[in-house]
Structure formats: structure tokens, C-alpha cells
Length: 336
Ligand SMILES: NC(=O)C[C@H](N)C(=O)O
Image 1 (cartoon, rainbow, N blue to C red):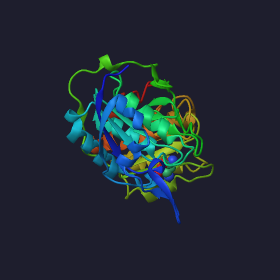
Image 2 (cartoon, rainbow, N blue to C red):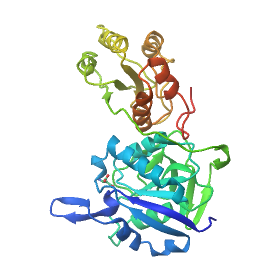
Image 3 (cartoon, rainbow, N blue to C red):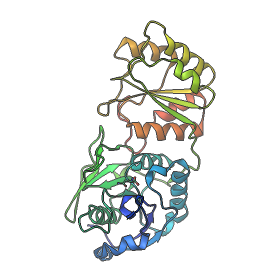
Image 4 (spheres, rainbow, N blue to C red):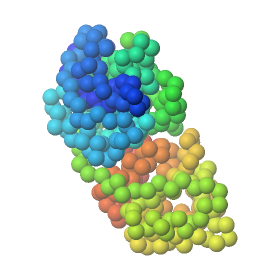
């Protein structure tokens, strides 16, 4: 399958590196110690290690995504591929963020972790780490992907759908890029030839973004309280997308104020599968027509959040933001 590769393992904490402490699981295991649990990988790769931080991924945010992207940029020429060990809880956000921060990328950036610590007798960690290194060593692998539970999922399409099971991640509204069975990688999407030219690294994100999840009865006035604090608000609406009026039109008024003050309002849906389409119902169409609100369509919520932060750092102008937001990047968006 792949030739002998030179890989960089970047360990960042998470359950995979955790041990039991008196106050619950916390990351304790170093990058080189992680590798000591998968000795057979030396048959197909040579690995250097880095450990920029050691966190439960609950504590990972934009600063860490930027750090990871800059480490990969600094080491890009030295390695054939990169594997990041990471906690699962916010892994889908990190994978989406790196998909936007590192574009046109011919080299694999694999993110993995586990539901059980690597030092337990029964654990998914060793299989996930071995699969990830194997995938990163394959010469057809490229771009940002999560490797977990035998699936290779595009970095923009992953969602943690199970909090405990080994098959924690699903590929949403898109097929997995590949599956890994035993030692074999079976590609469903094999598109490395599409990429030409140099990789593009971005060094900034604007994380001044709020996500508002609607519940029945929620008032649009809540948006008014976010007005001064955030540059963009993503509204996680119902179904294919719409906003309630409840006879008071409070959402319309609030969105009018936000948009005319130059804030970005993005529409998304709390339904995981199949995505939004605000043009279908009157409750969505009238708002979209009046305010030209960008919507997530088939993008995951995690990709929508990360893409908003990436696009916002490029431009806060509504039309320029919309253009960036609707570019298809690392398989994130098909439906427009
Ligand atoms: N399975 C895990 O890795 C969960 C852990 N709390 C983390 O995200 O760091």
C-alpha cells in the first residue's frame, strides 16, 4: 500500500493519553509513551513527536487550532504526513478548523483519539492510533481527516454522535473518505489528483462568534443582548430552517438591527442529517429574501462554526463573507 513514510505525531491530550486520577481522568501520557503501545508501526513509518499542549479537549479552542496549524506549517517540508492525537469531545471542531486553516493540502493531516485510555487492556486507542499512522503513511491520503473506529472521515464532515461507544464519529451528509479493515485501506473517495499547486496556510480566526440554539417560545430579544458582544451569530433553527414570529416579529426586528450594524447572521439547523434549505417554507424564505442570510445547507454545525470564524477573519463585509462561506472547502458543502 504506502511506501515507508516520515511522520510527525502531535500529541495534545484527550482520553487516549489519560490516566485515572483522584479527580477523574486527565491527560498524563506523553507522545513517545503513546507510540510505545503501537510498536508494529515502525514497519511502515518513522515518527518524530511533538507535544504543544496536553488538554482534555473540552479546553481546546481557537488558540489551540491556530497553534496546530502553525506547527504543521513550520514542519510541512520535513514530513510526509501528520497525526494529531486529540480528545474526542471537540475533535470535530478542531478537524473542521484545520480544514479551513490548511487548504490545498497534498499531505495527510490525521486527527485521532479514543474513548478509552491507551494504557488499558481493553481500549480502542491502539487500533485508532495504528490506523491513523497507517492512513497518514499512505501515498493517496491527503488533507485533514479524522480516523476513528475504522472510518476515515473528511475533517469538515465529522460529528461525535456517541459519547461512549467506539464508533463515536459519523460522517454527516457525505460518505466516509475510506475505511480501514485490518491492515487494508479501502478508499471510497480517491481525489488527490485534483489538487495542484502549493498548500495555503491561514494564520487567523475570529472566534467572536455566538451560537444560539432555538427552543419553542424563545424570543428574538435574546439576539439584542448579543448585539454588542459578538461579530457573528449562528442561529441553530428548526428543520430545514426558519424563524418564529409568535405574532411579535421579534426575530425580524433583532436581525434587522444586527444586519444593519454590520454583524453577520448565519442560519443553521439543529437537525443533524440532510441540512437546511430556507427557501422551502415561508418562515424561512421571507427572512432569507429580506436579509440574504447565509445558511449552512449540508454543512455540519461544527464546520459552520469553524468556517464562520475563518471567513470572518478574512472579511466582515456581508457579501464578501457570503462568498467565502459558500466556497466548497475540503468536501464541506455540496448543496447550494
Ligand atoms: N474521549 C475523549 O477523548 C473525551 C475527553 N473528555 C476529551 O475530549 O478530551
